[in-house]
Structures are given as structure tokens and as C-alpha cells.
Length: 332
Image 1 (cartoon, one colour):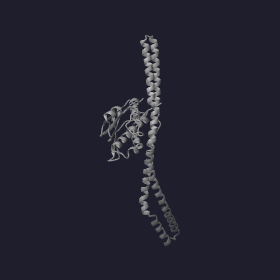
Image 2: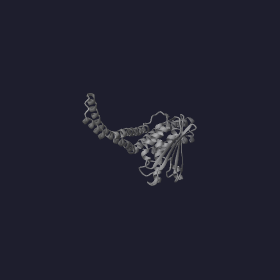
Image 3: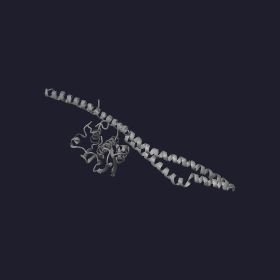
Image 4: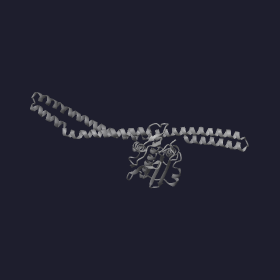
């Protein structure tokens, strides 16, 4: 039974109990009997609420794992590119070291001969030939560059792995303080292969205080909104024209922080706007969307954190989602 079916079953159970209480009250039963029924109804509602919360957590974690799985090939590509780059540089360094070993050996022979005062013209010629063979000037210029590029490639791999770890870390039961700018940067790194061929990304991170929140759940919200933006731009471009633009802006807004994610995609018609947060509603083709992303995002932002999730959209002009999260301890 999926979440939608469980919600419907819980609603039917609660509705049946409420009708029973109303019927007994209308039939003239004692106040004590009606009170007992009310208490029973409260227990059922509380139990169903706990069950739905547990299912919601399971669904959120399942969607997170699904997202990581969907992004896996892109992440593998993102890691493979700098790894191949490092491999090429390391092979060059290996060959360069081999040339230098021959040169060092000749210099060692020259040093030993100089110590005994027996430096022959032949040995000097061999040293000179070894230097030309090693192309010492070339190595002095390019070996430091190869080392620097290798370090850059490894740092890129480390950034990707760190971002993936931060994004996919299992949700803890306790909320805590988090740097949402860093969380957004990590999510953009993880999702890069989703947008790199369709859109450029601009970020404008304002100075934000630490936010009391469930970071793992907000990471999923950020991913859903960013991937939706990429898909909207992809649909608008249809493989042609210039790259679109995804713009991420963060600001402090009174007692909240505001994250705005804009895209230059297709925009949404009024009819779609009315249903955009409905569970299982999607305009994407089969296999590209389940219709749960924005519904879960709204639950996380509004119900879990006491924030707001709103949007501005116009057909042909794009969409901007606004996520407001209270700075303090309203997360629950």
C-alpha cells in the first residue's frame, strides 16, 4: 500500500469514528458514553498520525535514495573526468621521473669522478647528452604544472565525494544548526550533471546565520527544486539555442532565511499552478518524475519547519520558487 492509499485509509477510519460519535450523541446516549467515544477517537487519530509520520519519513528516505540512484551515473561521470585528468598527469610524471633518474645517475658519476680529480671529457659529454635526452628545461617548466593540475583534479574529486556524503547522509532524529549556503553548494555539486548541458548556474549567497533545521530533509527539497528547474529549461530549449539559466539567491528575511531558485524554463499555466503541490501530480514524461517531489518539499518546509514554499511563474518566462525557513527552533 503506497502513501496515498494509507492516507485515504486513515481518513476513512477517522471519518467512520466521527460518524459513530455523532450518531450516539444524536440518539441520546449519556455524556459519559460520548466522552468515551471521543477519547477513543483521539487515540485512533494520534495512532494514525504517528503511522503517517513514520510512512512520511520512509517515503522521504526512499525518494532520497532514488535521487542518489538517478544521479549516480552523472556523479560517476563527474568523478571520472578529473580522475582521468589526474591519471594523464601522473603518467607524464612517471615518464619524467624515468628521464631524471638517468640524469641523476650521470651526475652521481660526475660527482664521484670530481672527488678523485679524474673527470674525463667523455664523462662530461655523457652528462651533457643525458641532460639533452631528459630535456631538463622542458621538465622544469611542465612538471610543476602537472603536479598542480593533479592536485586540482584530486580536490575536485574530494569536493564531489564530500558533497555527496553531506547530501546523502542518513537523516538523524534530532535537528541541529546548519549552514544552508553550504548545503545548497553541495546539492548543486551533486546535481551538476542534471543541468550542466542545459543551463548555467549563478549563485548569490547572502550572509546567513546558522538555521535550526533537519538538514537532510532540506537537502532533498533543494535537490527537487533544482532538478525541476533543469527539466523545465530542457523542455523549453528542446536541444536547441543557448543554455538556460538557474539562479540561486539566499538572503536573511527578518526571522527567516529565504532561498529563491529561478529558471528560464517553460513556466507554468494557471491550471498547473493550482495542482503543482498535489501528491503524485506530474507533467513530466514517464520515468522522469513521480509527482512526489514538490508535495514532499511542501510537507518538509511548511509542516516540518513552519516555513513557506511559494512560487512565481509565467508561461514562456520561467519560474521562481521561494523557500522560507525560520531561523529559530520552529522545526518539529
